[in-house]
Image 1 (cartoon, each protein chain N blue to C red):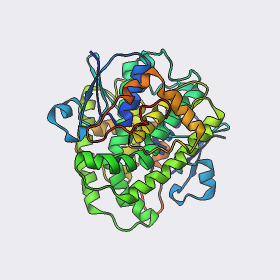
Image 2: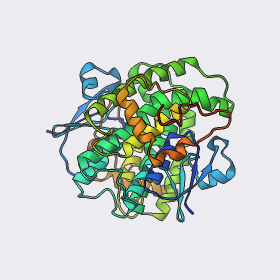
Image 3: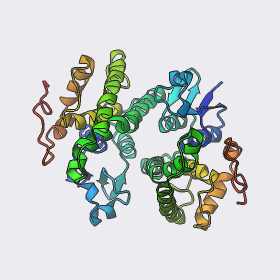
Image 4: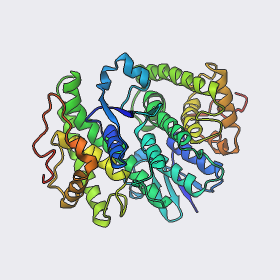
Length: 221
Length: 221
C-alpha cells in the first residue's frame, strides 16, 4: 500500500495529497509530528521533512519532485499543460507559492499562530503576524489580477499551480487568516477548488488543540 | 538578444548560466545588484529576485522553472534523463541543493561573509559562520556517498542536479569555504565539472572588493 507521511497543516503535504487524490492514487495517510524527529522517521527521511511518499518500494521526498513524478507516471487527469510555455507558467507560479508566498505569508502566520503553540515555542511575535497579514493582501491581489485574465491561475485548465496556491491558502484558512472578502474572483476560484472531490480529505483535517473554524469546510463560506 | 539579469555569486543564477552555456544558448549577462532594488529592475521583476531571463520577448523568473523550460525547448545536450524515476532523482537532488543546502550552508556563509559587507550590513555573525561550516561537511559527505555509487550525482549522466550542486559549491569556493580535501571523490567530480566549457564564464567572475582566490579558477586546484 502506498503511504504518505505528512502533517495536516503542511502546504507541501497538502499539494501532494491533492495531486494523489485528483489522480485517484490510493494512499494511506500517516501523520508525522516531524518536529519531534523520532528515530524511525529520521531513518525514513534524513532531511527530517514531510511529505515523504512511500510509493511501491520507493521512499520519495521533495514535494515538487514528487508531483512532477506523479504527473509523468500518471498523466490522467493532467495537471500540467502540454506546451512548454504553459508548463513554464505552471512551474513559475508553483514556485511563487512554495517559495515566495511561503516565506512572506505562510511561515510567518503559521509559525507564530500555530507551530509555536504546538511545539511549545512561546507566544506569537505580533510583528511577524502583522507582516504576514500585510503580505497576504498583496498576494491575494496578485491572484485576483491573474484570475481576471484566466480561468485558472496558470491558464485555461486546472493545474499544479492551483493546487500549490490552494494548499497554502487552505492551511491559512484553517487558522482563519484569509480575508475572502478581498476579492470575489479569488473567492470564486477557491470555491471551485474546494468543491472538488480531491479536496474532501483536506476539509476533514483536524489538528488537536486547534478546532476547525465553522467556515473552513463549508462550501458556501 | 537573450539577456540574463543576474548576480555573479548567486547559485540560482549560476545554475541557469550553466544550463544556457551547456545548451549553447547565447545570452548577454547583465549584472544586477538586486538588493538595491532600483525601479527599473523591479519593473522587470516584481518578485525582486535574480535570475531573470529575457528570452525572445518573454521575461522569465524562478530558476527551476526556467531550467525545465530550457530543457523542454532545447533538449540537446540533455540535462534530464528520459525515465521518470531517474528524472525524479534529478529533481529531488536539485531541490536538495536549492532548498536544504542553501538554507543550511550557502545562506549562512555567503550572507555573513560576503553579502553583509557588500550591502553594508555589519560584521559576520560567527555563530552562523560556524553553523554553515559545520553543515557543509555533512553535505560533502552525502555527495561522497552518492558519487561512490554513481558517475554523476543523480546517475550515470551529467544532469541539472550536478549543475545545481556545482552552482552552490562554486559560490562558496569563491570565498574559500569548501574543503576539497574532505573527499577525493567529490574533488574529482568538481574537477570534471570545472573543466567543462560551460563553466568558463563562472571561473571568470569577479566581484569588486572580493578578489578571486588563486585556486578558484585553477583546473588543478
